[in-house]
View 1 (cartoon, rainbow, N blue to C red):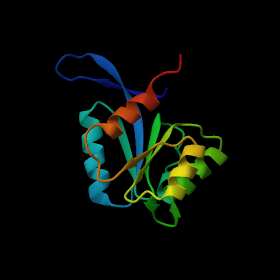
View 2: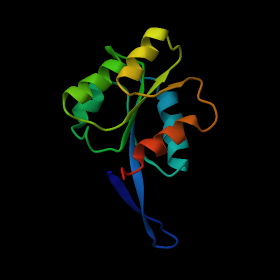
View 3: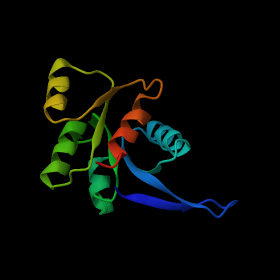
View 4: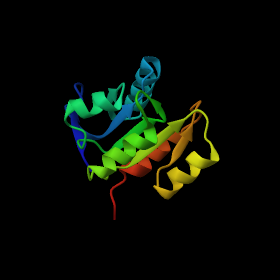
Length: 136
């Protein structure tokens, strides 16, 4: 697990935050997810597209990907497939507004959980925490 060390300014205590990468083309959604996940204790990096993610050059420097199904130039499933083709085996969670039976089947076969929009409750945070949990 890759984690980011953070030192609390008031106490001087250092703790580790799992790093989550969010890929979503909607700036409002990206910013909302970044804020919500940081409140939950994650370090978050956001990207508006797969191209932006790959240009950053540190694509394998995270603990979990949260990818919207609808991003520019390809789907979230295609982005996750490209990551896996590059031997990046970091857990990924797919966000989808409308989940078809076909998408559900493909995601299940690829072992990719889908969280449906609108995001309600703690489903996304719970899945991320599960994905970032160290293997025994």
